Length: 118
Length: 107
Image 1 (cartoon, each protein chain N blue to C red):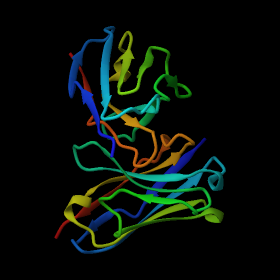
Image 2 (cartoon, each protein chain N blue to C red):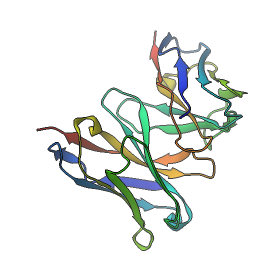
Image 3 (spheres, rainbow over the protein chains, first blue to last red):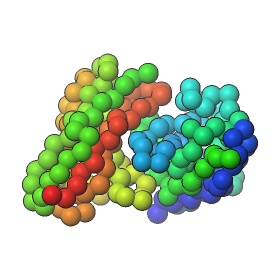
Image 4 (spheres, chains in turn blue, purple):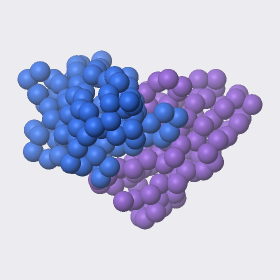
């Protein structure tokens, strides 16, 4: 079975940094593009970033461009999201999601919660 | 960016009823539309992609339709496990954007 397990969330002060991880199993990780999607408390879903299977193509939402960096380690089946200059509006549940050829998301992790507050 | 508008924002219905949720795109997205279900405290699950293709394991009481800018998700004979929130999302390139969601509650 496909499994995506996020970790690394927690409480961070405004202006701080945090690195999220997503451990993948049950599929050939190196063959799939991967995404991060977030959901602020009691709000809707917002796509954050995408990385292609071989890391050659990367996209970011305008709201995080220049502050967040998506990366992956294919031998370790792990996806990352390095977040810097964090703001209160970055407070959300962060999900990693498996990409498809059509830019929709067929499997999601359970999420990790990031709270940015002083 | 393409804006996705869902309606209604909330919906109350009884077990056994049929409901329809609509989604409008701000420009032509052909059939590049996905639907997700999210239950309280859980991650979203893919229901439909390419506007009308059911994801693996999704019951046939769910159906998607539409093209261009107007889409809908229909749920026939609501079951207790169908209550939760539903989101549409265009997958016509980047950035993919979501509708604001529809919360389906038990009447």
